[in-house]
Length: 353
Image (cartoon, rainbow, N blue to C red; front, side):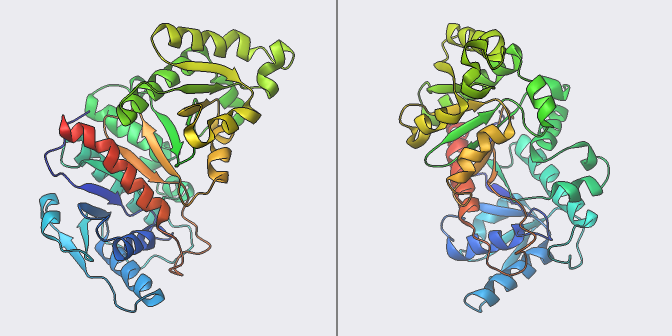
């Protein structure tokens, strides 16, 4: 991972301008200015000014000032309750709230590209991504139509920076809150393909990535639980052979490498055993919904999405663009603030090194 310069800021990408991203950013700076110290927004100045005015109208009536930066280092001179913004996308006209827009999709993608490359150069300590809309991203065309979402886009940018194929930069999604953490073997693929991706190599690689990331985060070897794929973890092969033939061998190999992994456990009970981080620090889930439903059920307002395996720190809120309430000023910044807090925590070891 590149070593950020001392005092490097955290970049918060603005997300889709038609969604709630800009307004939760504005609310975060308005309601938790000390928490947002050392953060800058990567995006469009006019969009953030519109969001600041919207949030003020819904709250105090006094808009937050927005400072346009020309260099990352200028963030240190921006006072509290002022939103520092780097204009890193083509200037946007007013984008209609709650409506799918290829223009907004491209701007959201451009902001992520800029921030990721700046982080890979060591100019930023971490990257926090406000929600983008996957349909809008695809509508923007190439290169964004090649990526199902943030995770795959960041994987591609990192691979380009490292000069290697994306397949050689394996990444995994972790969703975390104060009660539960889960990492997924597969991410944004159809369920049939997700099942096909449950292989010894993929499960073992997930365990290695999760172990390394949690070890850095916790300062000790993490306790990993592994969910089965089938009901009752296969019930000894009665409900499917994957646990016996794929998942258990991967766990044995991981344990031989010194990774504290146990399982496979029945997917319908393992998350209860991990809740409160008492018995396990993390659950490795076999596919997207298996892992994310339990965490999101505990409250999306406190969940944080983390991409593991990248040569940079990236977190994001555990919710989408919420087109249905965009423009009302009612969207909560709680998950964004949690994402900033975790990004700071994850970046601290790299900055101290």
